[in-house]
Image (tube, rainbow, N blue to C red; front, side, top):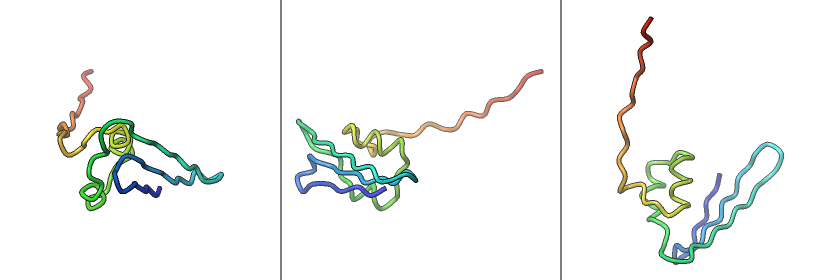
Length: 74
């Protein structure tokens, strides 16, 4: 996936390959701006984080929860 961001960070285009062809997604933010993409690009991003980022959620202000391991009780 390739992500292109406008200078004012109010527009984003995503180019995605899904084995049958390319998808081009375009989103324009009406109010506010997208969070800073440079910090995200340095460490990489998961699809869930990308989805949150496209919704305008700053993933640097969130914290990740510890993994919970379940035990089966017989």
